[in-house]
Length: 165
Image (cartoon, rainbow, N blue to C red; front, top):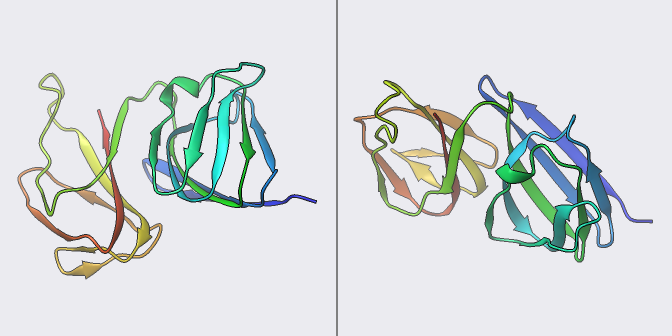
């Protein structure tokens, strides 16, 4: 029997979902429950796509995926290996978010959209124990970060940066 443990963490502006499972597990979501817009694979491999369509994404551990285009669809994930996935979820499908992994050692966020006076920026630790401005983070730690402030990062882990537009 293939299994999957699922966890959910509600945050003020977003939520984090976690799926940890065994090879051959199949996970299906309908548009009413699908709020994941970005996904990071800690480990494992699997196929992800719209149900009954042959076009799919191969999820792999250590990679970041933009899955915003699937938020209104029936989707399926089939694990080809044991897996550990972390999803970044919007609380409202009409909200606009940008997301990426942080690779720089000094981060200074600025507004990408001049028509919006103040974007909100959040970092989330996906893996390891990175250090941001002297503070060691652990998996699932998150914090709002602010424009015009520099953040020094020691990359001993994986951090995602998410901007609510």
